Image 1 (spheres, rainbow, N blue to C red):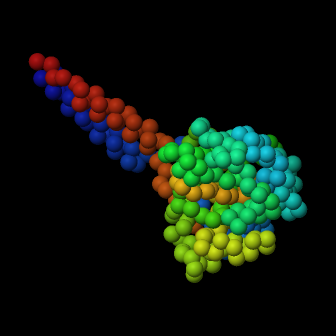
Image 2 (image 1 turned 30 degrees about the vertical axis):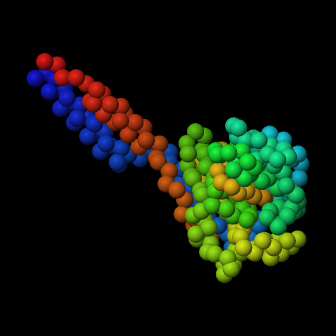
Image 3 (image 1 turned 120 degrees about the horizontal axis):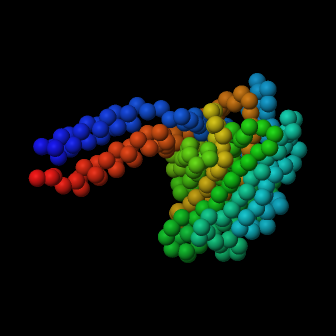
Length: 293
């Protein structure tokens, strides 16, 4: 009888947890919006980003100083006139690092490429080949960009030009330890249309105008409207390359999203995840509990 009462109490407890999990609002769930810019853009629309802002500090990395090493530190201030401005005195730092097991250098998965029909705007760019593309078998190649700032509360905008889009070009975005956005280029490809026909077909840069006309090129914007972007992971698990350039960071106050929204993958809210975790543990206890005679 006692065992039956305890079992019923545990069932009621689990039911209550699941009810809470369905309605819980986490202490801080970032409101993140991912968009893409107009066809032909290879960089952010700085004037539109800063419109109406009381603070708008920004910088861009063009990878001219990167040697192709496993780690690289960027100050986002080497991309030329009009791509770096910090009137409030802010400074940005980005540390790029090859992911676990990701090879670098000639014949590797994460390499520096000179501008060509597939990528690069004003010079070199990072290319991330999926392991099958370089004969490394299955798995996922990746590199991480860790972001910090001084003089402003944080970084609430990250933009990049993704060229020669492939369906295995993925981004995961974090605020501290919280996963706040997941982007996969297969979704963006579906929204941009097909070649020929889409305005996004072909390389739009002056040096490679119209080249690689069978692939799509677009500038992607990531806005954190309520928090900050501290880490971006680039990954590729296909027989293709992940080409990007003009990585841009900014602190904008107030920040507002612009561009056409991208349908991103759903991210579980941290508060709900924690409550569901307790419920699952309780279910495990219920399953393994033996009745007392």
